Image (cartoon, rainbow, N blue to C red; front, side, top):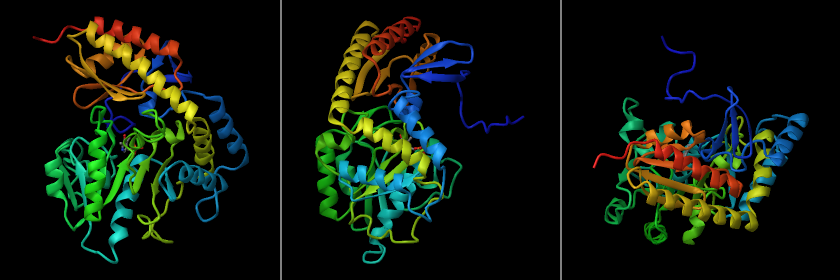
Length: 392
Ligand SMILES: *Cc1c(COP(=O)(O)O)cnc(C)c1O
């Protein structure tokens, strides 16, 4: 019999009832150290006082009015994002996949009048852009698309990291190239800076827009506000979600004026997108995260965690293979099944997140305490010790 909750998730039998900082308490009173952050969402941990205060103050004043009227908190958040990035304008969504929908629509609309054949979107294998029809068409993997056809047309997939294939895929009909500067679901796989630069140059040469999906790697995760800043290249359109709401559903599409020029009144909309509650929290997240001091701390904490993980790879060579990623977006590629490592973590009351390429993701709160980093490493050490070595 089908359960009341549609069984699309293979859930762990854990139910959390409260949280504070990097710690969660389950319904049996056990305390778990959270290195998953609801999949890179709780950037300031659980129950951060500034976020609770922003949300409850807004909840007491006004919940929702719709986008038929001006929303002051939304205007404030848009100004903050424009100020902090390459972008000239923002549209707010409730999720990453809705940001993908708009990014694709915006890119196609940009050319619809003057260059109407330019509709194709080039994407990379191993990517993840959400579960909407545009999101699964963009990612293209059989795991996400099988049985859901006919898929949204006009997407071409290039093997991740294959420069020649990317060059061959370009042409006068390509509206945009979409990619994650650091693949998240794909297993924490960064695109080297030189490749991002090369991609930008290639797209400029072809008059093609660049869409960066920073839903997972953005909002301070890598130690810069957005991951593409490391490479010194900017996109034309960027998708943001996850961390920007700190746990409240919120996403955004940021764009240059040129890329957004087709999006005139009536071309897109959302009932909830950028509502007062979401934007009150988004402003509070930006106030905390978008400062050089905070981001420097993310880089320092990231280096501390990474150093510890390298130590675990050395001391458990049969369990772990290598560490990759940057800042507090780190992946442990495993030799045993990554799912076993995640499960062993539950036994040690430590939460991590599995990803593709047999990788375990470590996505702690960006303000995780140093002592909690050390505790997480010791729990991961304990978890690894319970696992059988990989078959030689
Ligand atoms: C999570 C994610 C999405 C989808 O976001 P949702 O809020 O789950 O719709 C899109 N792109 C990337 C890179 C993600 O990590």
